[in-house]
Structures are given as structure tokens and as C-alpha cells.
Amino acid sequence: MKEKILVTGGTGYIGSHTVVELQNAGYEVVIIDNLSNSNAQVLDGIESITGIRPVFVEADCTDAAALRKLFEENPGIKGIINFAASKAVGESVQKPLLYYRNNLNTLINLLDLMPEFGVKGIVFSSSCTVYGEPDANPIDETAPIKPATSPYGNTKQISEEIIEDYIKSGAPIKSILLRYFNPIGAHPSSKIGELPLGVPQNLVPYLTQAAAGIRKELTVFGNDYNTPDGSCVRDYIDVVDLAKAHVIAMKRMLDRDDKDAVEIFNLGTGRGLSVLELIASFERATGVKVPHKIGERRAGDIEKIWADPKKANEDLGWTAVVPIDETMKNAWAWQCKVTGK
Ligand code: NAD
Ligand code: WQD
Image 1 (cartoon, rainbow, N blue to C red):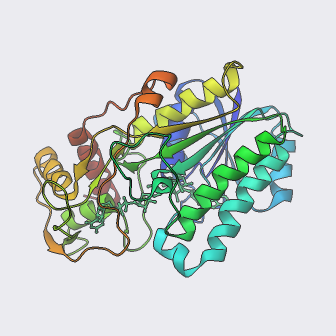
Image 2 (cartoon, rainbow, N blue to C red; image 1 turned 45 degrees about the horizontal axis):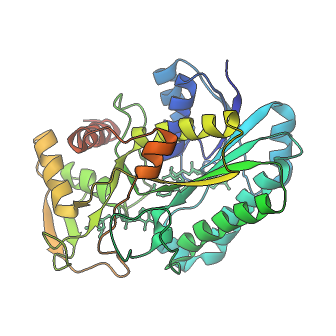
């Protein structure tokens, strides 16, 4: 058995896929989640895929006393992967304090307790949102950070700075900041996946719900952008590829004392796809039509962004490998499972 890892937000979308990969790699996992955006049945899915039920603590990471109790009751935690956060961009504009309180207090509480409990490293879920609208694509980690366009995005920028300042102050910990591009898809077993509450705000859950007849049609937000087909371009990355990068990052933090105390990696494929190309991929992969129409641009949308993943490819030794059609097939299988088809 390898080291014990605390996964905050471990019953969430990316967290649950990462717990599977950690357990498959031999790590012992403790999850903390307040179930504000997930449910405890996810643990059944994880157990059914890996044969192991992770330790689960239902508590809020903003509650420092509850976190302390967790560390006391689960001695020997060596690393943390911090997924726990509120993540809806639009909601963050309406409720900024909720976002600053939840996302920042969670991180600060974790950092505060790490030295006392001998936790060596923390992997942090950051986002390509820190780059804003890039001056050029693909974008690498040296690109400038642009002013955040939402409180949510700002929490990611501030969180990166908090971690950097804390380590600069001499705190005996390490960190890897992972800037995700657009995570999509589901586990190929269809036992875990994304569970959006209410009307999905992100493209793929909306698309699969439209294909399933839950939504009348998908609106493509604009077709007059400066892109090959006029719709926006993103770097869509399979959630299992993304999850695997966390296991590699954790191993690097815990095992490689020769590496910098803070490292930053883009996690993307290096491939830009438009909204219309993604719809075409879904239809090709599944044989199911996506009812859709062209609509107005969405306020604040970035025109095009995709990653230069060279640093992650070369330094981490990680590359995204799942073909886009496979990802879309998995997203559809998960949607069918959720809708009971
Ligand atoms: P998610 O909402 O599915 O998972 C987050 C989990 O954290 C949920 O299970 C939620 O219940 C839990 N949580 C939230 N606040 C908590 C708290 N105070 N205490 C305990 N648990 C708490 O989201 P996700 O898509 O899996 O995202 C995971 C992380 O990755 C987040 O930090 C998010 O900002 C970041 N991220 C996500 C994307 C994306 O497109 N999904 C892109 C870039 C970065
Ligand atoms: C993707 C593309 C839309 C819905 C957001 C956050 C970002 C990050 C990832 C966490 C865009 C288009 C969408 C629809 C559409 N999260 N679209 N019709 O905007 O790249 O990023 O999630 O850090 O911070 O802002 O992702 O999935 O919302 O949109 O045409 O109904 O799909 O215009 O081009 P986005 P998304």
C-alpha cells in the first residue's frame, strides 16, 4: 500500500475519477466532501470500479475544527488533492462572498494544517480561466495572467498566489498547480460521471441532455467569431486523462525532492475544437443527432483558447490520449445511465 492521500471534493466530478485512478495506483484515499454539489452514491460507483470503498468524511472544509478532527482520526496523510470549491461562473457573479469564502477558506484551512500533520504536498485544481482571452494560441504556462472576469476566476488566481506566498514564507510543503482546460466525458464503465444540478451551464452536459430529449435543443452561442467555422474553440480534455495527471503529480511531489517547491502545469490536449466540431464528433461517435440552433454570443465568452501541454508532456511524463469520439461516446453512455435509458 502506498501513501495516504486526502481528496477534498472527492465525490465531485473530477474528484471521483481521480479517486479511482489513485486507488488503482495503490494509494489509500480519504475523501472529505460536504455533498453541496454531489451525492454519497458516488462512493458505490468508485467501489464498484476499483473494489475499494474509500474512507468518506462528510464535512465542510471551511470548518477548521472538522478538518483538524479528520487529520487526527486519519493519521499519516502524506498528500492532499484539493478539488473542493464552488465552480459556477455565473453564480459567482451573483454571490461573490460565497465563492471567496468557500474557495479561499477551504484552501487556507488545508494549508494551515499541513505542516502540523506532516502533509508534504498539495495538488491544486486551477483553471485555464486564469489566462483570460489569450494573445496567442496554444498557450503555455509562461503566458501572462489576465484580470479575472468573474469572482470564481479570481478565486483561482488568488489561490495560486496564496500557495506561492505560503511556500515562499518557508512553509515546509510543496505544491503542484494544475490548470485544467475543459474537462468532459465520464468513466468508460458509466459508473461515475458528471451530475449537473438543474440546467447545465457547460456545453457537454447540455449537449447530452438535448440529445436525450431532456432539453429542447442546444443553443450554439455565436457563429460569427474569428474561428474557422465561426463558433468558439476550446481544448476539451477527457476526465480520465485529467484524473491520471493528478496521480502522476502526486507521485512527483511525494517522491522527487529535486523538483521546485511550486510547479505549474497546463492540462490540455493541445487540440482546439469548435462547438460545431464537438457536436459533429458526438453525432459521429453515437449515431445520435443533437438538436441545435445558432444563437447569440454568450456575454464574456472567450473566442478561442487551447493549451500548449508540452511542459506536462515532457516534465510530468503525462499526455492526454483518449480520442474525442471515445470521450463523447462515454459522455453519452453516462447520460443514458442517468436518464435510465
Ligand atoms: P464538482 O462540483 O463536481 O466537485 C467539487 C466537489 O467539492 C463537490 O462534490 C462539492 O460537494 C465539494 N465541495 C465544495 N465545497 C466544499 C467544501 N467547502 N467542503 C467540502 N466539500 C466541498 O466540481 P468539479 O468539476 O469536479 O471541479 C473540481 C475542481 O476543479 C474545482 O476546484 C473546480 O473549480 C476545478 N475546475 C473545474 C473545471 C471544470 O470545468 N469542471 C475546470 C477547471 C477547474
Ligand atoms: C464551452 C463552449 C460556449 C453551452 C467554463 C468556465 C471556466 C472553466 C470551464 C472552471 C463555449 C459554448 C456552451 C451552451 C454553447 N471552469 N456553449 N452552448 O466557457 O470554456 O469555461 O468552464 O474553471 O472557468 O468559464 O466552458 O462548457 O461553458 O463552454 O455554445 O449551451 O461551449 O460558448 O464556447 P467555458 P463551457
